[in-house]
Length: 389
Image (cartoon, rainbow, N blue to C red):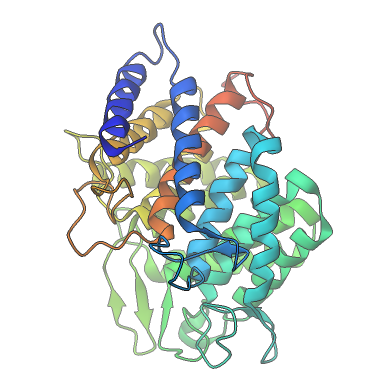
């Protein structure tokens, strides 16, 4: 399928999306789009020589591929996990290969083992958020196989992320292991979410307690009055007030998880408040696009899906599907790969990195997974959607 065919496909998808709640269902077209996205990723990025994915498309068989960064790998695990929940025979084998390859990122130096940015870069700084993304992805993937090695990878990466917490600034998790200059929402929120998901799987109370403490610090230190979250705080106490979708998204997820665990209704009220604030801040009312980088935007879609699962009006599914449609239709490069942002045409210097492809694939497959589960059309680990009594 060339770029012109992809655009026609996306236009047909828009027609299906406008029929939601009337005569049509977007599921068949979303499924076809998700399959196309993963085929393109596999064709361009999977390397038999590496036994894993490369960071950029392999342009020539004579050019040695370079391993994808850990962050990109986490996103691709998430994309393949969503696909495997829908069609395990087709996608679980590739997911299993990728999980095995991810073990190569393990760096055991220091008091706590954790995943590095790339394999065999023993002198490089390790990122606590990279490890949190892997922990979240593996917690999502684990129910597919119940393989103890998958749960062990989740625990290893989570324990490393938790090791970034200390008492400076009253608490919180650093962003980087060696360059300990800032404590970021992107290291605290996903670490807390990973801990809550691990607690749901294992029942180990210590992870729930750590998550509660990290979340309390993050709310107190990095939340704005509108509910959205700032980027980071330096050790000097200076707050970087930049707002990215994924920071607020992971705090929405944390509130939903806390509601599921504690049944405290306030946490669901707060999640709704943040979700509405995120919609006002990042959704273009004319196009429905999410005004942010794709590497962050798909995580906001994940958060809205989690919240939608506990509501009866499906409002967030409509927001998500419109945003995904815009990304598919307007953000591809001339070679068919997705650009950096979900609301703009790709810039000339946009590199077609794996992360930007995996983010869209994750959003599409998660839509198939959630809509299919809700309608009872697909096998899934997701329980029936909550309805108001």
